[in-house]
Length: 427
Image (cartoon, rainbow, N blue to C red; front, side, top):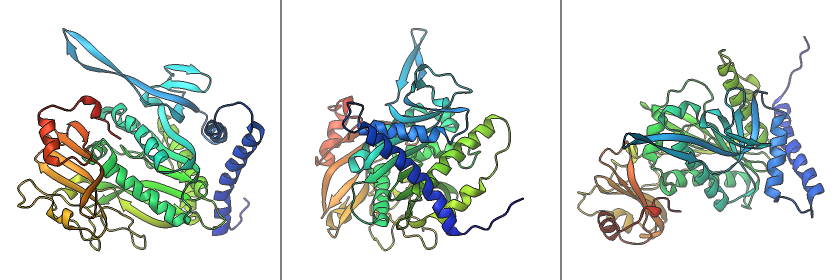
């Protein structure tokens, strides 16, 4: 047996090699295709990533682009089943189990596959900014409906991979910014209430580690900046999702190396489980995670069950976000409040708090909740108003984009059925 001691720098160099290799493949493709009539540069990057990953993943899986589709029987109508076809938006990279599940349709690298076959979904972009991140997160919203309760154990690992970002600040600042964006999206901008996301997540029976996060994005990798990873964490008697941001060290781009190991490990675990064997721990991956990158911040995606009982959660020195691990900065940007409908002065604290921008929750009746942003005491941008059925944990009827209209006017319109169903999915 040959043995050699390795140090942390060796591990970092190894993790960086994958980034350099992928970047070189993209540069070579760009060199030969520059000025040639061909698909967009974004598609060229997709080709490069697919080609790279094909050499890394277990053979039972294939890498394609395309859609996820399924049929659902909704109810009986005149003694006949009403069947609904659901189709996702197109994803850049779908890694699926071709050994077990045949595709619904296939033409070379393009496929339409069933939800149970998909193991990893990756959206690729050259440069990540707010609009691109928003669009990708909205794409992944489709998975909430495609993976109903009985399919949660099949939910794939989901990720966003970018070659760079438009922000000009340092890596640590950039990664904290995107970390906070995830918080804003899931708590305030998504059309799926966080209450439902956690409801689905906590009903799942976790059997394999690492496991794809039910109803949440798993990771964001920016090659020249760093990596954001989601993990399951226990807080009291409940499990919550914590996102941790890692920043590349100067001149050492380890983000893609760690990202790739997570994907390969997830696929390897799936392959081992499909073969009926016990999974093993990838020591190399665990060691690389510990040594290759520095943690620059983390936050927990809050649960409405924790937020709503509070009448005033405004004090930044005592944020609602749970305690972060020792030595990791808390990057939460949420300073919010809920005001019960029987409060003597609803929203008075928010409207009188003018020191900074505030992301807030408000309760306006037993089954009507609002969330959005205040600036200097006034509501700004688009607010979302969720109207629930009586059982808050099961379904909601509509999500409305109400703008700067008063809550009283908005609620009156809703009760009068004045708004149309096409406002259910606002942006």
